[in-house]
Length: 199
Image 1 (tube, helix red, strand yellow):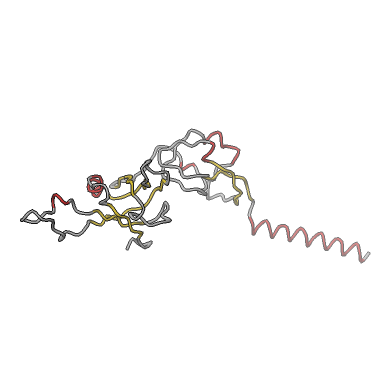
Image 2 (cartoon, rainbow, N blue to C red; image 1 turned 90 degrees about the vertical axis):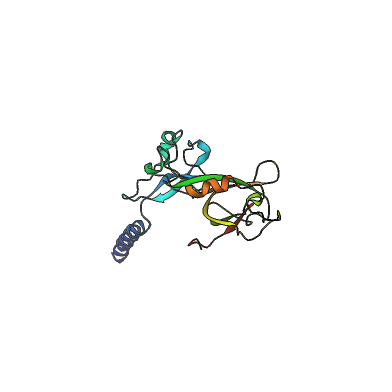
């Protein structure tokens, strides 16, 4: 009888321990996550998705892995980084760039941008003044005009570059700064990584 009672007690303890663990860990399910960078407006392909295990949360409408076929062909609303868990709100008509912002790509060579630069980094884009518009009265060059400083966020870094030894970096910046960056001559743009607060 003591052994039977002990066995029953052990069963109860095991059940309680399992219940406690389930509460702590949550009910985990297989959901879809982003496998590689996806640009806003880009249609999802099989290679863009992967399955991960996540805790079920009624407040977060994650997309089950079994619904992958329903995601293929739909477009991303905003740029997505690897590891992002997919939700219905992240798919649909592209809502990027935000109002008042533009995206621009620049081809930069080593020395014009920090090594290890990655998507999500805040940078200061320095654009040197156009020499032709910054000449001294006697025809000589004047160095009195400092380069313009344009705050931006890195959206992507393409190390394959432009085929001429430059790395193509895609930026998100103010629309008012877009024209100045577009008019910059080759070699007149330098990126410096900024602090998280943009300073």
